[in-house]
Amino acid sequence: MVNMAGGWQGFSMEDSRKRNMEMQENFKELSPAEVLVKLQRGNARFWTGCASRPEASAFERRAMIMQQFPSTAILGCSDSRVPVEVVFDQGLGDMFVVRVAGNSLDTSTTASLQYAVKHLSVKVLMVMGHEGCGAIKAAGLPSAQIEQEPQELANALKMLKRGLDEQRLKNVHDARAYDREAVITNVRRQVEGLCRDAAIMKKVQNEELIVVGCFYEISSGIVDFFMEVTEAPTAAAEPHLVMRGVHSGVQSRMEYHVDQTPKADCEGSEQSLMEKGQSSFVPPSPDSAPVKPSEGDGIYSPTGISSQSHKTDSDDKFTVLISEEK
Image 1 (tube, rainbow, N blue to C red):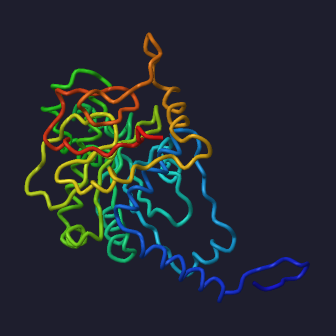
Image 2 (image 1 turned 180 degrees about the vertical axis):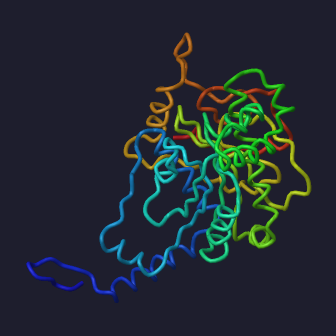
């Protein structure tokens, strides 16, 4: 600390260097699984209305000049309703963010994420789609209509369209389910693209990195983590209609999250705050009974939606967002 004119106290560069080294040590101590739990907790705070909205002090901002230590790199959509730091209740320096319409990979977005993995050593690499994505809806339009758009936009939409598997999506007749499944299909394609990178997969296999896909529901504020990768894809995986709630995907290593259930870090009764948050968008039942997990599912479903017909072998392990125990 150094005294400045008028009694204001500033910080020397040596102070900043020491603080930066502390930030680096704190970063090194985090495991990928712990980072993912941190994101789950942050989202839980956000959708229950008790976000901490972390802000760095002047000292911490100065320390960040030296070097950044983001724990997460995320490919998200440019949509103004999807500010990822807000959705996960994270602060300055926590996330390396790449946003583009349709959260899709191209030369620039891929290079940015490769930089985050190789040079920043992020612990979680994430692709997040969202409810009501305009880019995905536009990609589902007839090709002739897409061709009427400006050339660069048309080219981007055609790239998205190739990965949507529209023939399979024709079997989904509910509009909201179609929207969700189309977005999830696109997220899976982008995750598969990232996992064909040998350097990324080497870190995954060494348990230095988690690669995960997720879906953000704007209407509720909840992020569903539906896919975690542990080996490079050998062929296009068949996406399935993802049930509501936070759960793992194929060959998941998310047992950690079952043992250490993330909760909202709020004052007062956490369980009551979570239930209060969900009540704002869950239609009340006739007897006003609280929403409970569907019997046999082992999954917490904030909206109460659960379909056994959509359950696959990969859904046997679930990450429960809110513990039944207070």
